[in-house]
Image: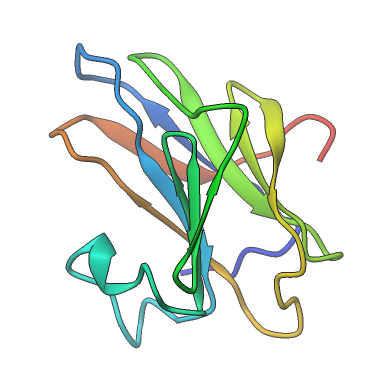
Length: 131
């Protein structure tokens, strides 16, 4: 697995018929060390920042955003953490907004994602225009 600083992570939804709100985020916990079984396990953890629908979660805090990440077949969605610690969410190559600021960039950060439905997805580190 590759750490994610200034390397946008995107997923393309290649199958599945229904619209849904995937979970996408970042963590400072290496996937070689721990992979959570359920998102409720990390909702109060200070090493995870993630978004589901229009809500952001970190260290027990919930923030409602004015925008929502909802995807359907053919959409691409993703995230990035910039060197200044800003965590942004993307859909179809466009930044929806900065989800969180002040993430630690002095340590590796990995992208994390989860879907409630059995969907065909393709994950890759790909360039996002303007990032």
